[in-house]
Structures are given as C-alpha cells and as structure tokens.
Image (cartoon, rainbow, N blue to C red; front, side, top):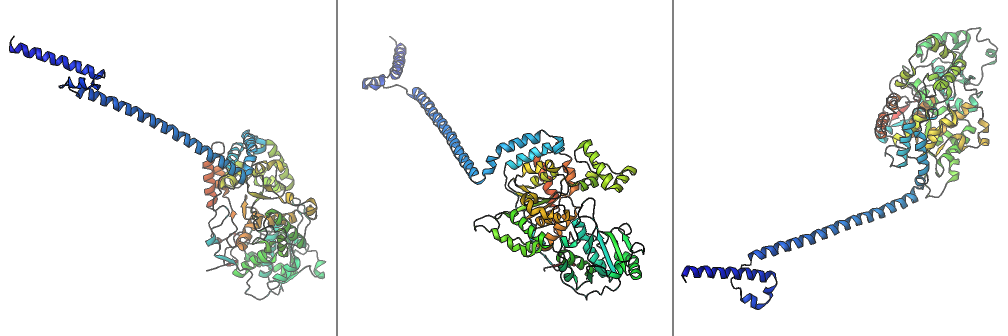
Length: 602
C-alpha cells in the first residue's frame, strides 16, 4: 500500500474519531475519564460558542422576567400610594371643607339647572353660570390681592378736610332755603353743595329739607336721617346756619316775589360765577332764595381751595347718621361679622358710640373673624327703566318698563318717542347699562371669590324680585341682605322710609372688608367708595368694574371658555385698581385723594 493511500486512511480515521467525539460530548460521554483520554485531538470551539449563546439566551430570559416583575411591582406600588393619598385628601377635605362634599350633589343640580338656559330666569347667561358653578365647585385658592388694595400708594394719603384756615361767615346777604331731590345719596350731595353755596354767597343756610318723590315715597326729613345739632355746630366756624326762616320771611310768597329757583333754572354742575351773577341779586333784593329740587348743580372745578375743602368737611365730618340708624347699623355689622370681637376701622365714623356695642358678642380668641364682601346691586326698576337697556326679559319686560317711564319718567318717555335714540345694544356696548345680578355674580366668580364667601347685597327692591337673585343665591349660598339679618321688629322703625333703609345699606357697604360696585353712576357706590378711601388708610379695597370692557366680554357669553373669561375679567378689573389722585372735574365725594380733602403723608 502506497504512502498516499495510508495518509488518506489515516485522515478518515481521524475524521471518524472527531465526529464520534463530538457525538459523545453532546450525549454526555465526556463526563467519563476514558472518553476524555480517547479524544486527545478534539476541537471544543463550536460547542463552546453554542453553549455561550445558550447561556446568553437563558440570562436574557431571566433578566426580562425580573424586569417585568419589577415594572409590575412599580405599577402596583404607584396605585397603592395613589389610593392612599386620595383617601387622605378625601378625609382632609371632609374635615376642613365639609360644605364642598355635602353640596356636591346640589352643585351638579345647579349645573343642570343653569345648563337648561331658562331665558326668563337667567337671561342669556345659562351657559356661563353653569361654567361658574363648576369653577366654584373646584374650590381653588383665592388670588392674594383679592381682599387688598395696593397699600403703599393708597396709604400715602391721610384725611385732613377738618383743617380750617378762615374766619366764620357772617351770612349777611340773606337766607338760602334748599329742598333737595332724589334719594338719600343724592340728598347728601345736595346738602354739601348748599353748604358751599352759603359760604360762597355769604348767606345764612336754613337746614335743608327733602322733597317728596313719587319714586322713593319717603317723607323723611333731615333730622330723621342725620344728627341736626352736630351738623349745625360742626359747621358753625364755616357758615351761619339756622333751623327755620325768621317769621317775617315765612309769610312771604316766595314764588310771587321771584325767589324760587328750580333745578331747571340752574345748569348742571354750574360754576361759582353762575351763582354770583344770578343768585346774589335775588338774595340782595328779597333777602331769601329758595333752591327747589336742588341737587348736582355745583361744578367740582374750578372751585377755590377752601370751598372744596368745605365740601369734603361737610360730607366726611359734619354728616353723621341719627342715633336710631347708628344703633341698628351697629347691630347689622355685628351680625355680618359673626365671630369678630372687635370693631372695624370705619365703624366709629359710621355708627359713633354704638361701635363699642359690636364688642358685646366677643367670642374666644381662637374664633376666626368673619370677613365679608358687600355688593351694591343698582338694579331697581327706576334705574333699569332710566337706562333704556334690555335685560333678557323680551317683550313683557319692554312693555313693563315703558309703562313705568310713562308714569314716573314722562320726560324720558316723551324723548324716546320723539327722538331717535341709540339702540339698547349700542347703549350696552358703551358700558352704560347697570350690571344684572347674573353679570354681577359672574364677575365675582371670575375674580376668584370662592363659594364660602359671605356676601352682603345692598339695594332696594331688585327688579325681578327674589327670582332675579337666584343666580347669586345658587353660586354663593352665604348671601344675606339687611332683611335677612334684621328681624321684622328691628326693621319696623324704618318701614316705608327708603332713605333710612338706604342709610343702613350705606353702613353695611362702607364697613365691608371688600366692596364691589356694579354701576359707576350710582351715588351710593360713589359715596361709599369715597368714604372707604378717606377713612380706610389704604386697607379697604373697592372693585370698580369697567363696564364698557365687561360688555365686550359678556357679549361673547355663548362661546367664550371660562378660563379666557376669567382672565379677561381680572384684567379689566385690575386696571381700575391703580391709585391716583383726583382728576380735574371729578367728584371729591368719590375721589377724595386731592389736597383739598386729603394730605400726602410724605
């Protein structure tokens, strides 16, 4: 046999051994010593790689299982923690804010009720009121500046209208009789204007009288509302004043001798020169002049410095409410504040010695003071009819208001028939319509007053009655009026005396922790706002909405989202919070931050 043939056979034998060795290895024969000795030339690389791959797969599977178990564990842990926190939050909510949970069903009912959009009850605001109810149910934290004024600039002024720098007037040119028209607030303005006129004309002022109005139907006179003796004594260093005309003048027919001057004869906001030119001659000729229906008939500028200060002195110092009004006003404040055991910063100026009675119901030191928001809804039928606006009541509303104008506002009714006037939509777009109760409550909700807010609603008979207050009552359950807080017996002395009832509203609004106006043209809101500025020391915020901007927001009520509505309302109101001195021609009763009324502290 050749050598080549032997090599081939040898290779075959080795190949056979290699295959048998590999076969023995995968069958487990390598575990015996004899098998390891019989395969000295075996190659392990192939099965090692396979073993490595197999090991890697097993490790990867174990790792995936562990990871999966870990993820499942984390998810379970998350749900357990979340459940635990939710239980604690619910428990805390029940403990500290029980009214939210207890009223959750009622809130849902309100959402459904508002969502029905009953035009007769809620006008065109059913959708927005539903959104407001939902927002209030969330019980968000109130904005920090909601109950505050910009304290630093606001406190830079202090009252100083009580300072005098002149000699008393002799009142030698004759007597001025004044019969003021309007309600309590219009009469207050007329009184102070008359005091200034008496000084300007060097005349003696007879204590003003009030004209009976078919609208107000109130026979109250000066001493029924104000302290007459205090008024006379406080102003003695400024003017001469008497309670009645001398007997020799009482017998005169003032109209016959040309001494009666009506508000028609005097242009609105006349300058001092008008009175010096037209009234002085009558005084010097007849010794008396009767200003009948006198009201806002004296301009705010130009007025000499000391006369303007006299105007402020009359309004903020000389006019103090009668004792029976102060006593009932103190009772009203005590019930409004509930747990508060101390008087407010303005109480002494409003209710005089009766401010001490507010201390009688002092509770324990741990009792939390109950602050409240006052809002004046100038939505009586006279205001609604005079505005010429429409308020969602359709044809029935239009006919009712037209009939009222014909009886109580005949001049306006005639003007409406004979002159082309702006449409109700145009009037509203200019911000000349009073806010409805629905618009007022939407404004409060958008500003951030939460559902727990105690709200005092001032005003006479709201047009539409208690039905119209439904939106306010539904969103703010802690809503009260003087009629809710005072018993029928306590209100009996004021029954049928609208001006005296208005004085109680004045006290409740002026002493409030925050005050919201709904109509910038309202005399009560203007006087309350000015009083809070004069005596508030920069700590008595007043919300003065820009009705023109609000009108542009409300007109989108059917499409606007609540978040956008909220932002726009807050911006519109925030822009009115700037502290600034009185502009030329503006009312010192409403804007007393001027050197005639208040003095800068720096």
